Length: 464
Image (tube, rainbow, N blue to C red):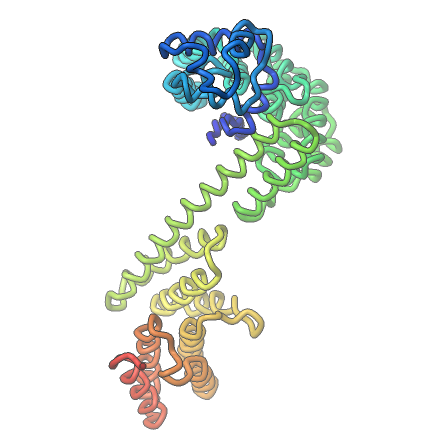
């Protein structure tokens, strides 16, 4: 699956799943398909009988090649395999290499539209058009049509841009061009504003927002961008109340990346149920793009968490403030992904520790106050660490009795050494050592002795 991000922030998807190809198989001209099969068979040096390999008769293939019959999709797959080409090539006329070249050009175009709309962009468009000439890949042609229109708008050719964008917005449901209706609508709103036609801009934008609302996508970046343009159009026309209404209509609070991806997947299902397969693919591509982005962000957050943890191994000093910043970013990023809650809890403890070492007790308390009795960390070592840190904050404010109570809660969370699972023994030992040092500093010999013994037991040979 591939998405091409236009400068207007909308994904226009192109995929080659078996379902997409099966749909194209139902739409393609019998004569065109037959000619491509015959050309590929002859190029492979096969007779008609060899090409069908006993699946049907040679006479039946002859009727397919002459355009009198359309092969069943499973038969088409078998023929493609026998003649050594892809089903995509038979249905679109594009070889794998040629199609890949077009896709690369389309990926490059949004950048060129932003940076050189009158020079590089038109040259790339011509190159893509040349590669697509004589083919029937509706998805790529639809995407190119949108990018061509956006290039015209960026170059200041308003009449050309408006005509092209109106054609895309008006494309019937099920047409490949309709997949770009949101990006085209947003761009058309902008074109009408530039042409000093605010009434037309507002009308186009309102219709596009209605379509987004129908599939539950008002709370998306696309809707926010569209609403911004519509509000500008209303303001240009002096309609302040209408501008305020359209801004209120669209919520920019999209939640996490994965929440937003879920909205796109739901929209894809609704579009598919409505018979608009191309639009469904576009929304599904947007969801996949967000999910992949969330995975990359999660990996980045894990790297930052490790970096912050390593900084805390240095003696107290300037590294603590750096660790606090790094861990803050790591935590914010992790909580916006599908990372396990326990992972975010572990980073939260590190962040509170960094804040405390930096002398920022208030920040440490804010971090620790994330947990209440109902959502304490599930990991006993993380839970104990949070209690130790809370006790240290209380010590700094002179509340010794309250601090000892927090330390006792930490000890209770850890429990007996033999109850700690193998892969958490080292971490639990560290918390016990820390507790021992804190009690030692308070001249609480008995508590310190218990803590040090527990740490030694965990640091020794594994319990069997």
